[in-house]
Amino acid sequence: MTSFTIAVVQPHSHPPPDDRKNLDDALRWIARAAGEGADFVCFPESYPGPWRMPASYDPTAAISEAAHRHRVHVVFGTLEPIDAARRTAYNLTAMAYPDGRPPARYRRTHPNGPWIYSSRTGGSGVWEFEWVPGNDFPVFDTVHGKVGLGVCSEVYMPEVSRALALRGAEIIFLPAGLAGAGHLWETWHTLLRARAIENLALVVSTRNIFDPSGERGLAIIAGPERTHYESCNVGMAVVGVSLDRVRELRAGWDGNDKTPFCATKQGLLTQWQRPELYDRIFPATLPTAAG
Image (cartoon, helix red, strand yellow):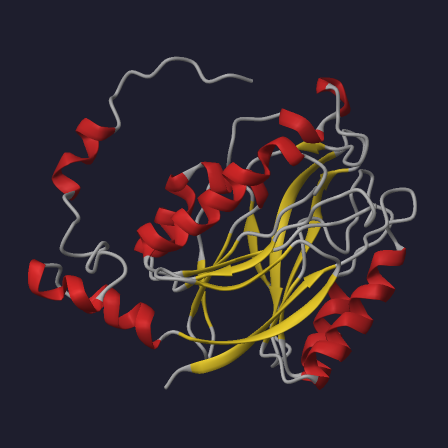
């Protein structure tokens, strides 16, 4: 049985200019999670930071060292600076490895820029950098399964999770940024479940909480047939999961005789696919996307 544990951390985060404090907190969370037997630790988007350009620190070395020392995978958020003078950067979800190799990196791809990170477009009061989108959908092998990384509201773009699943990702981490957008909570929650169902994957997400008295978080581990864990509060949970059912459903063949034994549709990445129709699904001429 391919069982392992995921520590989902929903921290009381420090916004800029105090975001450097998040790194010390993150290191303590990693030690605690490892002490409770975690194989993966998942932090929110941009945690432990930095959130602004020019970047005043880089958490990568410290997170990587802690992951190596405690023998855990650590999914974390940071910036990859491009040009300090122009304040340009990629927004990263990264994953540090327990064996000390360089971290895996995913550069946020959607939507079109400059979007909400830029102070030129109104900013968010938290992020302040000129975001440059990436163009690739890498997936990463671990001893527990193949991992895909995304960022926050890319949950609203099913193509992102599907691209990762078609490349073999069985666990998709979609760490999120702010918890304050309460009007989005219900759709966000629904879409995290949907990404797990349609891709026959485990989908993991958590958010920053700046004001525990007034913000509703969303930490979740969603599977294709059920939710394994969910919390709105600051804190950490170490949750046991398995990829056995994910792999069984992916290898399965949908049919009426299977319905009593499945709470979702099998074979969605094999039996159900019709690649010859993709150019019809995505027409050659598209309207200009909103900025």
